[in-house]
Image 1 (spheres, one colour):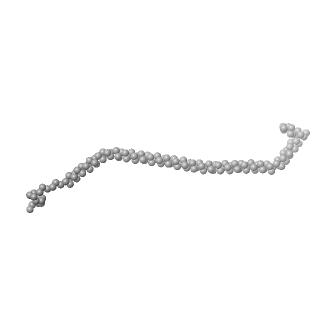
Image 2: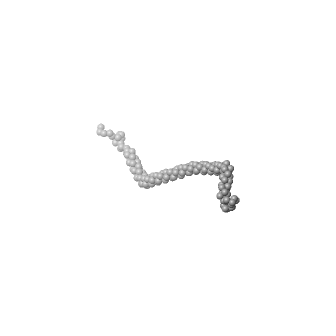
Image 3: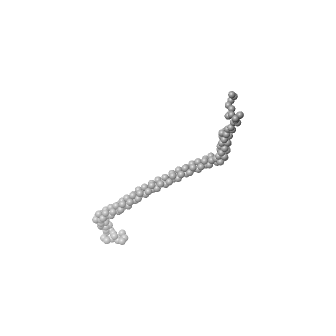
Length: 142
C-alpha cells in the first residue's frame, strides 16, 4: 500500500492521518511488554556473546603470554648455547696451540732425562781402589 491509499479511507486526509497515528500509538502501547521482552532478550544475547568473547580473549592472552615466555626462554637458551660454544671453541684453540709444541718438548725432556740417568749411573759406579801389598786400601800416611 502506498501512503496516498492509507490517507484516503476517509474523505479528509488529515483526519485519516490522525486516526492512523492514534492506531499506531495504541498498537505500540499494547506491544510495549513484548517489545521490552524482545529488547531484553536481544541485550541478554549480546551480553552473553560479549562475556564469551571476553573469556576467549582472557584465555588467548594467557596462552599468548605462555607462548611468549617459552619463545623468550628458548631464545635465551640458544644465546647462552652460542656463548658456551664460542668459549669451548676458544679453549680448544688455546689447547691446540699450547699442545702443538708437545712432541718437541717431550723429545727434549726424554733426552734430558736420559742424560741425567746416564750421569747418575756414572756417578754411582765408583771404581774399586787397587789394593797395595795385599793390605787393604791405604788411608793417609802412617
